[in-house]
Image (cartoon, rainbow, N blue to C red; front, side, top):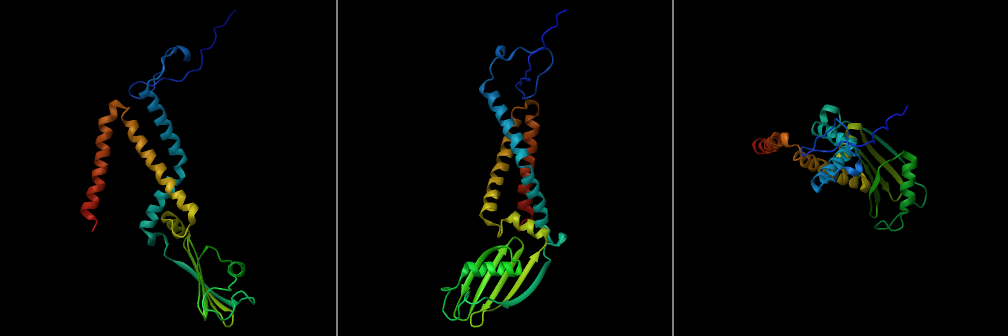
Length: 234
């Protein structure tokens, strides 16, 4: 007894409204008409919208949450810092006595010594020197460390402030003291989110039965943003 061959696997085609059509048998791929430019554009716009949304999900959620914590830092204790001080004496030769500037200072060795001795994190933000003292500043998200060195004795004093996790993510939201790579990440995230927003609006034009309602909703949302700014922002 013979059995019928299973139908070829096919994907549903899109109608003018951008909605899937199914039901009944479909012609083989080779016999179906090729998609026009409009359908191809809708297909790739939908693909771009879906996968960019998934790709940027973590970034979008991060910037949404930190927008709230940044707007209300006192709610989450972001302004509370843990401070500590320390002091010590540098190895001979790292910061020579005398001089009027940073000439002769072993900068790399000095920074590495301070990091190792006191678990300092953050990037080197500033190193200044005059004829009496040298100052070294480290900065990172929600973190500062300042070291003052007496050039005549090589004695130094450290003052360090560490803020909590909420303060860290707030500074990451702003890109403060977070480095060049994170700055690029913020820029790329902004571009991706803009493309997701625009592609979602473009897809609305392929949903004929929802087009007018969608456009009115978008217009109302835009108007609300402007009215809040015009009415309540000093």
